[in-house]
Image (tube, rainbow, N blue to C red; front, side, top):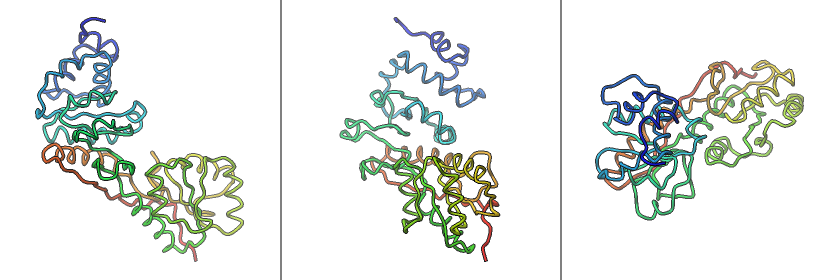
Length: 300
C-alpha cells in the first residue's frame, strides 16, 4: 500500500491524526488518553507496518513489548493498566505486537495468553509470561497469582464456619489457573464437579437435599452457577453458602478472594526490567487478598 502515514493509522484506529501523533511520540507531554485508545492506535500502526522504522532502533533504549492475541487484550484490561503504570514509573516505552515475530524490536517482551515462539526461547531473548505455563519449566520467568494458597484459604474459611459437605464447581477447561485452584481445594471424593452449567439447577437441588451446605465456584463458572441457584430457588447464604475463587465484576457481596490483576501487570514489568538488566529471571507469585463478602454463613 506504499508508505504508511499517520492519517492511515488514524483512519484504521478511528481516532484523530493528533491522537496518533501523541501515541507514536510516546505521549511525552502527558496528554490524558484512554488506555484502550492508545492500544488501538499501536495495534493499527503494527497492522499497517508503521512499526518498520523501529527496526533501526538499537537495543537498550527502554522499549518493552506486549504480545497477546486480541481476546487477551479485551479480557485483561486491568493487567494492561498495571503494565502501563509500571512502565511509566520505570521510564519505559511500550509497543504492542500482534505477531510475536517482531518482538525483537523491543528490549524484551511480555506475553499474555499467547504462545512464545521457539526461536525466542532458543536465543535467550528477554521474556516474561503473565500466567504460569508449566510446559516452559524454568526457561521462561513468569508472574502469576497464587491461586492454590488463596483457594485453600477459602476452603479453610468454610470449614471454620462449620461446613463439612461442600461442592466445588470447576470449569471444564484444564487451564494452569484451574489446576492451581483445584490443587488448593483438594480432590477428596465427591468434592470436585466439572461443569459448564448444563443441568446444574437440578444438581444443586439434589445436593441441598443430600445435606450439602456450601458451594465453591470458580470465577469462570460464576454466571451459570448464579443462574442455576435462581432456577433451583436456592437462597444464598440461607440455603447454601457461596464462595467464588476470584471476584466477579460488580458483586462485592460475594465471599472469596481478589485476583490482583493490576498488580500482576506492574510486577511483570518489574520482572522484565530485571531480566533485561541481568539475563536472569524467576517465577513470582502474588498473594490474592481475601474478600470477606456476605455469602458465607456459619453452620451449627
